[in-house]
Image (cartoon, rainbow, N blue to C red; front, side):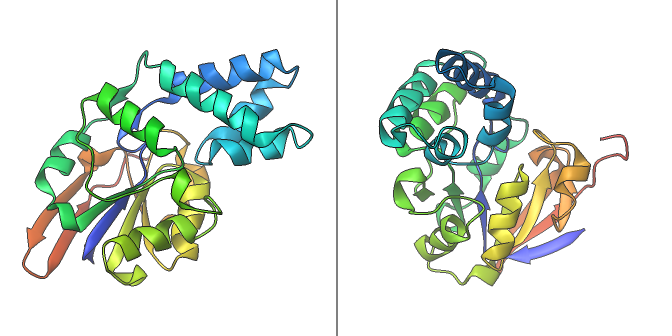
Length: 220
């Protein structure tokens, strides 16, 4: 499949960075310490701001205080945090004004994980600190487009979660799913799917970007 866009908005965890082992370790540890079901907590955590996960699984707790603890645990846990295939090459090739990072992580956590993974810090970032409502609300991706000075329809999103895809569509953007976190059937709402960023070829042109998507095999 071929898409044209002025810019790309990348989610971070599960798209640019493999942080899944660290995310699961942190949330399981937090859940065990608070006598919560770890499986239910982890299921809520992918693709959402940590404070919203806490509000969903433990509404009786002080979400702000608990979120600060979870964030520090995530910053401290760097084991296995690595760049995903294709991430470094894409970030290196794209002009700084034609891409942004739109993540559910806080800015300190995003900067820490990018550093652990050996990836550059993008010039343009929207983090959990910059929004009132996280994904699947359209707010994060609308702010990403505004940060680049573009209309939503001029941007295309790379996501790995159903919540992120829903956020992109609610913002009026097309979404390319990468199959690093969820099975393909749970990402079926996306406009296209690639096994990883290596399955996305990008041509930088005078009038924008041309994206050529190599679909994953049916077994993915």
